[in-house]
Image: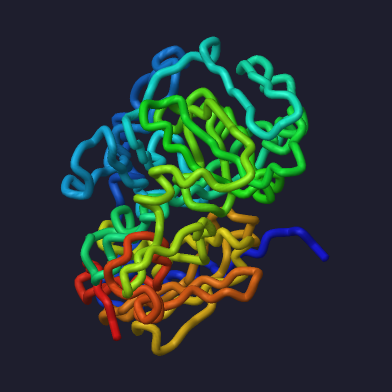
Length: 423
């Protein structure tokens, strides 16, 4: 079986023929066919009349100023103070699946701290044969692992439980990023200390003022958890836990403790503030369901969307978005143009990876009419992304966390898009 990637069957002739189907696109196609001179091609442009910047102009490369809109954004009213707040990844303006560190969402409980590699220490204690303290230099000497995973805040889409509210994929689904991590398997470090038979859980803390202490079952800790110090080939950014953070694949982002300082092996969960007062699922009868760490299959169309409206007339259109699952790999994504009445299978840009973002495309010829765009993800366990109403039948409308319901964008005839719900 060939590993050669499959590309859509398109051609210039087919593209122009489809584009000519709408009035605006037909006019453009007609100009091109008539040979109307285009000064952007026929005239020498200013950037070709002299020298550009030298290799020493910018020691660390930054995005070009024309992409200055591709930035993290806040929702002012979401939290009381920016020190304990969140911002959002501009997923509507990104392509592929890897999130640049510089625009990957942040969540802090007491602000991003600054620490040097020389000052860094990681202690492993509790129900172990030999408590140990590791320096950063110690961690660098262990065998390394490289893997790509998504990190999603449990509250991603949480503002939408009661109904359509925020305008844009960045704000409804942007508490997520997907990066290639390099680090040491936590299992390797725990094996160095040895685990006593009664050890069943670990309790992890960060070095910041909040510590964000969380309990994790030992079974997960010994599976695929990483102690990471690189992301996307470079050192972690300050806001992402420099110099060392925990990576807990497929599980909610609050477990991915930054500035990791201590791991205690215990015989039971610690029941800390961050896992009792927060990150539990409020049920309609007032009870709180806890230990719901795994992020279920989810997807969102990133373009067209409210922040990425259609800027062209009828004709060829690329509908694209992201899908992911904490249960494993995405195996398929369906797209609906009519609010879930009919579905078409989207094309995955690449086979789904374990607990990582998957890019999907639906190549469509738009006739200029309104659309109710939806995406529905499936993963390798057979799980199918539910509607919001299906979730509310079980969870009600007063929840905050783990909203993986299907998102609807109303694309109007003028190309603008709005966050709506359909029933």
